[in-house]
Image 1 (cartoon, rainbow, N blue to C red):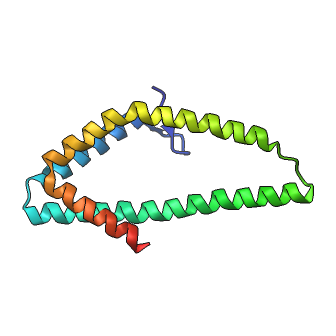
Image 2: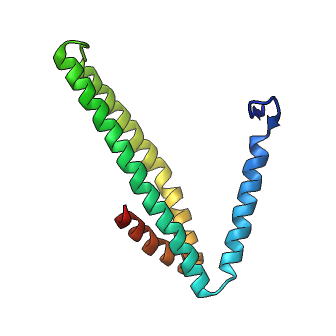
Image 3: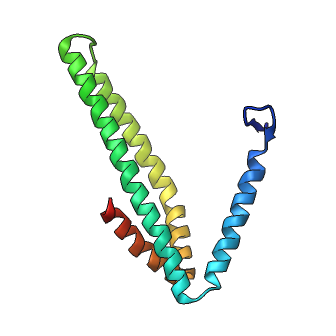
Length: 140
């Protein structure tokens, strides 16, 4: 696989970096799993809170961007700057929606199994993550 460059001509092996990141994540998770119940709950809650908080912020930004662009496009269409073929837009949106639904359905069984396996092996981390995630959602 060709390596990416960092702008200064030096190569960066993406596969190697991904392996190192995965190794570091696994070591950290093993450290948490070997810790006390409180440590597992704490780390799970912290990770859940960060995930929930960032998810809400990114979700709000995405919704505002999409809504704002649709509003600008509608105003430009109304003023005569552009002529939007809304039938084609709606058709394309339906096609994309169906493709995404098919992709989610095909990926969901495997992903759900992995999440369930992780949650069963790491009950305290999963419980802490769930609580932290809900708190993170409510904080933003």
